[in-house]
Image (cartoon, rainbow, N blue to C red):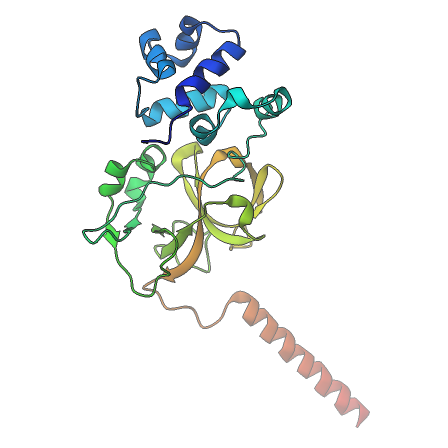
Length: 270
């Protein structure tokens, strides 16, 4: 996080004082030592551990990006109150987000594959180059030069008609407000460290998630429950598509019935 955490220590101290808490009180709330808290506030902790980033962010209800990059002491009182009320542009995805990547020997960006067994560790390690280095890596032709790509497996029947076990290649979404309604995305959730593949629509402070399989009802989640968004780019599967979907079959039946009714009417008229 070199040069990324210039305001981390001062922001932690500022927010603590704003809550009128002593270092001892805050350290007890966060279940860390007072000396560790003092090291954060003084700037001696150059690279804050991921678990500490989440711990402070969750307590103050301020995004990690804001704690790292925004000098909160320079914000006006109205803006601070707005921030404390949960209106953090980073939590809503309104600003560019930071993503850790890995590169090959030629300094080209890798495309990592996130297998099902790695889901449990992804939430904690998604921004850790050492964790990413443990993931399988692929190089596919014809991928756009711009953007960061990762591959995710599909699980369950909520993604039908895409077969379970297919691999979805997605592009990282930096600015969440830029996505169009019902954009197909892999949504990485903080809760349960889960991935879902949904049609995503950003509302004011929530996402509407809609399954491709219409038997599942759409539902909403808060923006701050989302860790990352990855927009669908392409699909790789070993299964051939079926001859026709249920809707195709239903439409064919309706057309056949219409023709039969037309024939009967014509026969009567004759």
